[in-house]
Image (cartoon, rainbow, N blue to C red; front, side):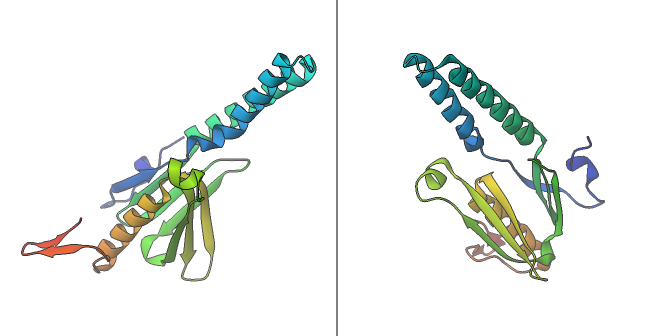
Length: 167
């Protein structure tokens, strides 16, 4: 499989990359806990074996999806290849992105820094990237690259005598 970085166009460079968050393994850990609890309480060995088997399948699926998923911001576009039950590809030019938002859960999302990145295009199409690591940081990087591409200065950039200075 060719990486996204190998498919960059002339004059295009890698600016920032993102990944999925390991919180996706939580379900596997819950199955492991249920299997161990079943063994400790001597409830049923088949149930314990089933729970541990499901935990192994869940962890393998999440590991495969995590290793195959790529999310890259370049100086011209956002390229994402997201694996799950099906493969999803996004190739969005930065000027196409009209609105960006990121959501994080009150407790786990903020504490572990994961959430959903929501992108709205000019034609009204909405794309969501779920359980992403640092969605606020990704949103900020996309805004910075979009502003540089369009020639505008993003909110929060400080000016010095030499030009803009990021905080």
